[in-house]
Length: 80
Image 1 (tube, helix red, strand yellow):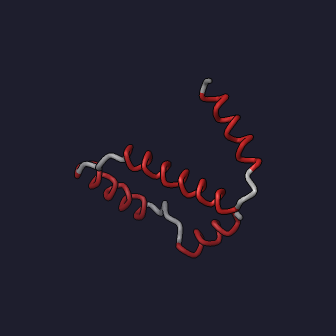
Image 2 (tube, rainbow, N blue to C red):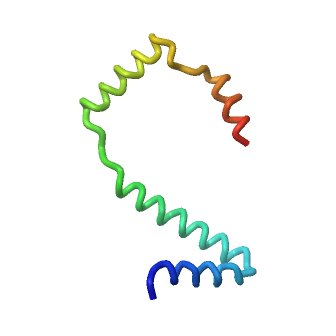
């Protein structure tokens, strides 16, 4: 059985679940596994890259390529 077929079978089985506790456990498990994969792929940043990012941020600030905290909050509210 290939992966696509297994996923479809799993979805069909999931749709039959009526116990909210089971759904919560599956959601938690999926979230934890995705977090583990994400963290495994993280790589440390070099000092050079770090300082280059700082320099770029300072340059952006001097050249007005910034957004205020209040404007950002307004923008985020519009996403909902």
